[in-house]
Length: 83
Image (cartoon, rainbow, N blue to C red; front, side, top):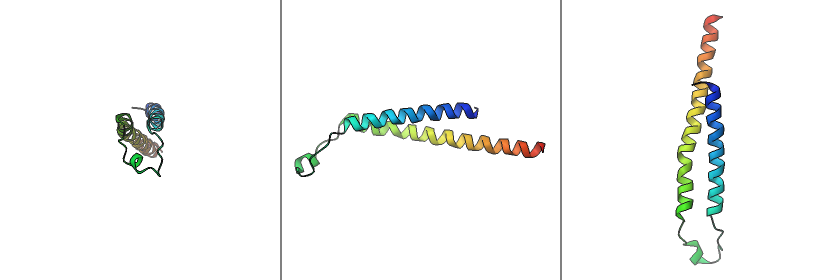
């Protein structure tokens, strides 16, 4: 896997994360904090799914960032060997 592949994957993951953030904001209905019955309202399945979908996206982003770091260290080592 090359750095450009990791960067492309990270860019796509950021876009997916952004799309999920929009889903979360759309699924969240503002409530009147002065109305206690609204404070106990059920959370929608759409909101729960959007939040849960962010977990693998975060893991993917971190994995690609780590892969780039490893590739950078390998390149540094190779440059030091040839120098």
